[in-house]
Length: 139
Picture 1 (spheres, rainbow, N blue to C red):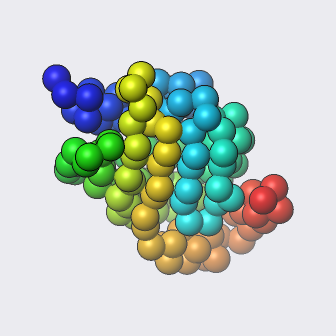
Picture 2 (picture 1 turned 90 degrees about the horizontal axis):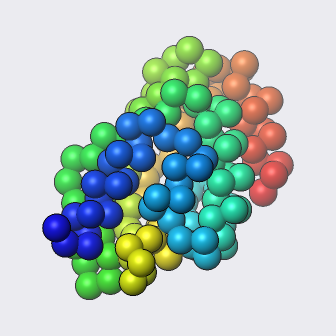
């Protein structure tokens, strides 16, 4: 199995039951993580803090991988994230670009997605505002 295919398998397995500690299976300790609506994280520890805020807002968050392709230094993965916000279902498509290090862990992840679905869902659910605002203030 190629390095990219192995990485995608671990990424997919992670998203079947995401946990903070599960990130260790895909991200290097010094990973740089870039995504809309979140601060850029410059380490796995920072990424875990950001992800904890996301799981607080959407505790049942999960993802389904649709396709992927190897790149010169890593992999691109197309997937759909879904969960609930204050009891209302939400889903959005994303593409993540990963740079994979020699140890098979990602040293960089840049996520691309339209933030509209998330912001609209939060806006329609006043119960989510405190958690969403807390996650913004942590920036």
